[in-house]
Image (cartoon, rainbow, N blue to C red; front, side, top):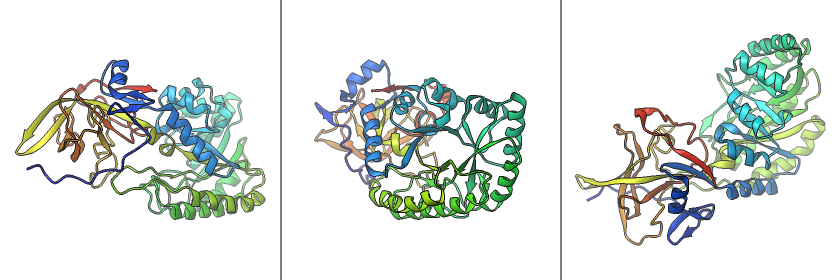
Amino acid sequence: MNAKKKPSHARNDDFPLIDGQLSIGNVPARVLASRVGQTPFYAYDRGLLTQRVTQLRNTLPDAISVHYAMKANPMPALVQHMAGLVDGFDIASHGEMRVALDAGVDPAEMSFAGPGKSDTELEAAVAAGVTVNLESEGEAERITTIGERIGIRPHVAVRVNPDFELKASGMKMAGGAKPFGIDAERIPTLLARIAGRDLHFRGFHIFSGSQNLKPQALIEANDKTFELAIRLAEAAPTSVELLNIGGGYGIPYFPGEQRLDLKPVADNLDARLPGVKQALPGAEIVVELGRYLVGEAGVYICEVIDKKISRDKTYLITNGGLHHHLAASGNFGQVIRKNYPVINATNADGKVHETVSVVGPLCTPLDILGDNMELPAAEPGDLIAVMQSGAYGYTASPHLFLSQPPPMEVLV
């Protein structure tokens, strides 16, 4: 008998079935595979991207600006689509900056975060007019020197490592000792040094954590972020123009998880904003989101190459795997491996089910896309879809591992 099956996921109705096949952008999976010309590939649904941003704007207060964190998915066509939807972009490298500039993003609406910016990256950002989120006192010194050398006044914000963390977050980015940002207690001294330099101080970036599905935790983090920013603003050399309060909004990946109820978070922001605006009258309040905007709009498609039984356990062996989708394999931050939602894309509503493990072609037991999952029966040539694949998929995976061919990406 097969090993005990793992709990199943709730059906994602954002991708309707057409003749029993999963569709992306209203294109059936097998037709899309023919159109792409190969498997495996990532496909992103532009309609769902637009829908998510629209829903977010309809829920959050009008005074909140929405920025896209490009690190979640920097595919050029997707970035260009997002440029028409959001108010600004957060970048984490010179490469991301070039993609955003090519997509027509206004440099004045871009911020550059990351703890290890090189002098070349700092110079490029200063030359473009991008706001640099300072992550250390040393970075403040280096960017001052660069600005003086090239004759352009740098735009800077200060990334704060707060004295609190975002509870229940999948990845904690603040609180305690961190490589990200400058400890809150050191900020007043840094602000005094900025006042004596030829830097255009814009404000603060306070990002506590990511992948949170608990509204109360986000509410608490937002409240503490506002309190900290208002306190630090008393030491600022000029009025605060920009307050990036991060995001941390999560999406459901695993069985039992539910979509974030954003309304309590939005209601709390609405209640807090009058006081924040009174204390920081010129500040643009920014929510910076990556995964939340794009994660559920993406699908990873691979093809079943072989089907085999080993000691009563059934394996679907595909031409995809951890080298293309490290997160789905469980090797991108999971302590205990859990299954992403996986679907038989070409027989999604099949009546005959079987318990299978979906694995890739690599010579490692870590190459697992789905472990002991109940799926409609599949055969070689069928397509397997890994859902929730729009964020931290293609670019977060080791494509060169074992010299397998890379996947494609398409925006549908």
